Image (cartoon, rainbow, N blue to C red):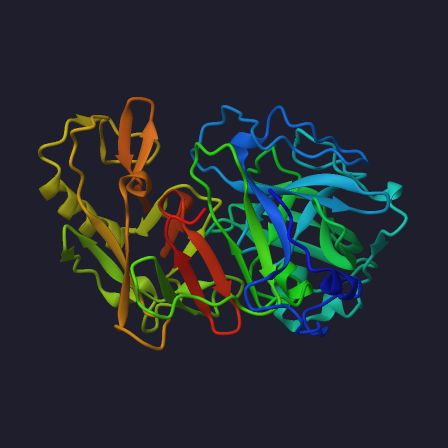
Length: 428
């Protein structure tokens, strides 16, 4: 995948540290600051990338037989001087980026060496009383700093099942396939953990809300990516924009615009203004509080490309389940798998229910609501000779999480200025 870089912006990016630094508005609305290949985990094996300096790049046609349950998307980052290559999982809700660093006696096992801080001449630790460590919005991440270094504790999962702990540092960040450098890039150096982490990844690329996300440090006003289908052998670009790209304003069927909102209980998440779910044209009778309206601060709807399935809270799933049971009599049922209840024989003659997701329209023109009609690739999760509806019950959380299976093949553009998520269909 070619990397599109605008050279005048590259020079300015050398000085980028935090989101309040200015960037010249010289780019056209549809041209990205930087474009980075986004890899699906199946592409990991047999690449020619190693953790040393060089001009080698991953073989985009490499495929590994990793089972896609709870799968993820990832990218390579070049950090330090000289550069070291780390492979990080993309997370739309993480407030910071981080990589496990050496020396580390309590890191989770990895397939790649950790980032060697002693080998980088541009590496610096951030102190407990640095401006970064005193950012009010990050108080829950940094806690009450008591030592010399600025420590972080970032939680993942809707109930904080996994934690990465370490210290905040700065170093030079270089984007793959480009000469774009971000000096004094702020990220975390993980030195311990709790809960499960995937050994394929050195850490996380943070695209959540907040001043220390990648887009904030680039001063980007929008970013976009396209979750490629799970059988794809080619990456899709992750792009950051200085000016939000133009989205469809004409109300055709190729794309929709969804209004975003915030939730103080989850300050780093992008919440979607969700309306409901229909099955075969029938809107399910689910109370709006389940989708995060009213005083239900524990509820709401988010996108998570680190999760394959779509999880509905119990109140919503019980209604969904009852309706599916009325519609699947003509399908040959198979045993459920890993939380997937509605599984069937994989037969080309099957006629599955039509399921649509409805959102508040983020476009100033048009109807109040817009719909996202799931095609069979998005609706179904395949396990050998069995296909399952890609919905599961989120028993431990009040959040609704839309997973990557239902977003594959759809270009997602987060407009951070207008608080809109654009979804362009069949555009990877």
